[in-house]
Every structure is written in C-alpha cells, then in structure tokens.
Image (cartoon, rainbow over all chains, first blue to last red; front, side):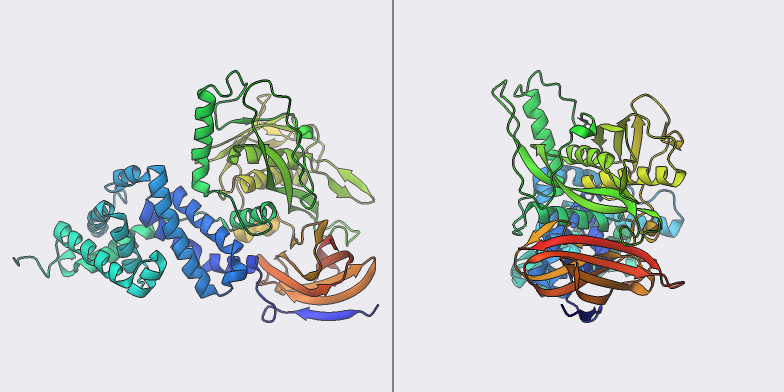
Length: 184
Length: 367
C-alpha cells in the first residue's frame, strides 16, 4: 500500500473542541469568573458556574465554531447559571449577608477611601432586583452595549434600557451623584 | 475624590475594583476532564448532567433520605465520607465496551440503590515514550477514562473514591513485557471532599523499595486522579494512613497536603504527548477520523504515523497549538478511513540527537 504523507499545520487544520476551549479559556476564564463572582459573591460557586459553561461550550463546539459566538454563548451560560444558582441554592441570603463584608484589610488612606466607595456601591447593587443587577454589571464591568446585554440576557433592548435606568436611579438615590445633589 | 465621580463612574470603579480581588484557581484540566467524561457518558451530545453546584444538593437530599429511614440500618458513613473495599473489588470496564448494568443485589429491604455508569478520569504511570522507544526516558502520568457503575446519586466523593481505586490498581508496562503495580498492597479506604480540600485515607503502606522519583510520581498520580474526579480544580489533597503512619512508600511524608504544580511545571509530571481521541480500543463508525491530543514538545513539532493491520498507510507532521514549556493541543485529520484495525503513533524527536523524546500510541477500529 502506498505511503501517504501529509502535514497538519496549526493554520490549516480545523480547531478541535479541546483546542478551542483551551484558547477561550486563556482569554475568558478569569474575566468570566470575576463577572460571575459579581453576580453571586461566592468564589467556589463562581468557578463552578463558569466551569459548567466551558464544558457546555465544549459540548456544543461543533455548532458554535466561531470564537465570538462561543464567547457570547459563554456569557449567556454564566449569567443563566448564576441566576439559577441564586434561585436554587438560597444563595441570595448569603449574597445579601456578604454585601457589607470588608473588601480589604488595613490599607493606606487612599485605598481605604476606595474600599469605602466600593463597599457603598456593592451594597446598593446587592439590594437591586436580579435583572437590574445583571444589566448594570454587564454594562459597567464588561462595557457591553445595550444590544449585547439584550443578547446575553435574552431580553429586548428596551427592557435593558429600562432596567439600567431604574437601577441607576436607585444607586443615585442611595449613594448620591454630584450632578444631581442640591437639586430638587 | 468621589465628589468628582458620577454614579456610572462609581459603579464602574466599584465593580472593577472588587472583581480584581477575585483570583480564580486554574481549572482548564478539570474542564477538559469533565468535557471528555461527559462525551463518554453521552456520546450523542445530549448531556443529562446537572450543574456542578447542584451536586451538594443531591448529596444532601440523599442524606435526608437516609436519615428519613429509607436506608435505615445501612452501615453508611456520615456524608460526605465515602468508604470502599480494597481496590481489587473496584470494577472497571473499558470505555468503548458496552456498559452492562451489573445485576442488582438481592433486595433485603424495600429500597435498593440503583446504579449509573460514570466515566472517570484516571491517571496512569507510563514511560514517556513507551512503547515506541525501547530505552526508558522518564516516568510520567497519562490520563485515561474508565467507565464504572456507581450507586446513585453519585457525588464528588464517590467518584473520587472509585477513581482512586482504579489508579491504585493500574499497572505500568515494563520492558520486556512485564508490568509493575506501583501501589501494590495499598487500598483507598475512604475519600471525603470539602470546600477546601480532599482527604484520602489509605490502607497499606506501599513498597518502600521503589525508586524515590517513582514514589513521588505515584503520589502525584493519586492526587491528579482524585482532583480530576472531583472536578473542582487544584483542591489540596491530604493523604491519611489508616495505620496512623506519617509516610507512604516508607519515605514520602504525608504530613502536608499535595497539589498540582503551576501549569508551566506540568511537564515535570505529565507525559509530553497525550492522545485524547479516539480512546484506546475505540470502535468508530465508518467516516472521517480525527486524532487529537495534548503536547508539550519543543517548537510544538510532532510527527505521526498511521498503520492498518501492521502496514503504514499514512505519515505526516503536525503542530501543537503552542510549544514547550506550555502545553498545547493538536489534531490530525486523517480523512475517511476504511474498515480495519488501526494504530496511530504520535511522537516528537530530540533536537539534540534525533532520538525519540516522547511518544504515544493508540489503537482503534473503524467498523
């Protein structure tokens, strides 16, 4: 039988699911765990949720193929996973309990000021309805557009705008805004 | 300063500041382990697996059933401790074989736990270039998947216990033709899993005459296996000797916990080339076949050869996604293969003298 000699180079071959996941992992694992932490306030739970999202992406890789689509899929999966976890595990109570937990130990004055501001905002965010919290987190942590947030959450752009507006209004009322302070 | 920030800036600042404090553990290996295990359990791609965070709930529900009297008088430990018989009793079925459900034991009460077939990652010790190179290069770990029946509901502890039993019972091939069971005389008595670590209780003390490097690698084998089965990344593993001893194999101290090294140090433990698909002994339907795996080789350069019934039918070269010391992935599309028995060999050569530095071989059948 004739010997067939071929070369399979990195640029020529189709990406296997393992390769694709390894590449996505390098770029997205840390930011997605951090995003998820902002939604659930639990280190191990955040890692579990994102791990499940990556496994699901591996499972559906033949259908996804495109890294951009896979990233969007990952975001949807982790936001849905966070919402399910909060709903099913009673994490809401733990989440609420951690909202005033100190972020840093003893720190210099400027860091202490930053910590205080962070705690104020995180405390108010934690008290918002889940959808408002998700919209604000995706908007201001990932800098997603309204259209991108709508795609991640599976809701209309108008709903994204409404949730953001209500959430920001609550935040302004609780933590103040120099642009509106003094106005009645 | 905050007076100069509007609400949106403050939200952005708070989210980024708080998120930056989150430093997640590495879980790539756990993700790929779970993905491959899922593929073996659900080859059609329809996963029935539950979210990882639901597993403790299932375990708690099972415990409630026990407390509620369903399994009254069972000699069950308090969850999440899992006990086992010696590892020789742990059943293991090749992943590509049909998975018959073992006959149910004769019911002695109204409730008999059902079993489910679970694919588990098990790390085994092989030479880094076996069986291609006759000369011993170095001992290293290679991952296999084994399918075993476990009582439902399964949880991290029961999976880790079963995987540990398989790892301890694994045999390392030796030239010429012999095998070595590194963990001979040692059994996994129990495994408990918490949020902060995994504890494995071992019966037996291990062979004190093994070379020191092989002793340490054997401990790595057990650590990687139970971590892989638990699927929560690099959780510290504590080994407890049932006889109260402070060493295993006569000289490896178990007074501290064990963890995987940093990813760039994986090459000190793992085999340089893994073939992750197809699984050894797989029977594939007629069609295109792609061989894929992981590699940590110089310049990411790999060579491969495909034989059918002993005759070479194709050879070629491939590139891993990244070269050593990083661990990359590779895939070799073989195209459409006719029916037959195949052996695929993937290897890398030494830049120094052209000898085979690392190799891996997998046999499979196209029906």
